[in-house]
Image (tube, rainbow, N blue to C red; front, side, top):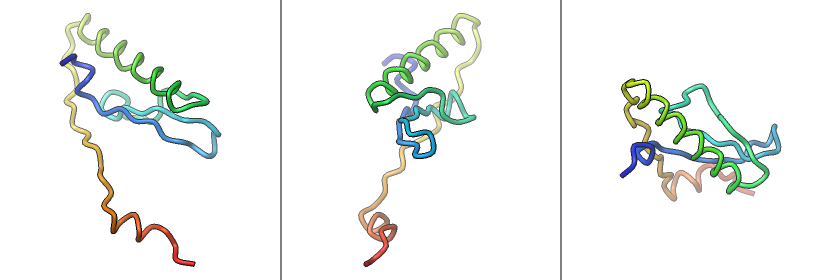
Length: 86
């Protein structure tokens, strides 16, 4: 496994921006680091940025941050609770 594969990466739609925004909280804790018109475009950019960051840290002999962020799996019950009844 490549070092960059340990980090959670995700893309989500950001209504205020009208774009998909890419996140990798363990490497870029300040928020979204790239955007794209499609999920695929934003994810490609995000993967490139994660790879670049990991390689730069390794070149500088710096310790990689721990891959601590885990995906949150919403349960069916939680998803039903968040949808208002009509």
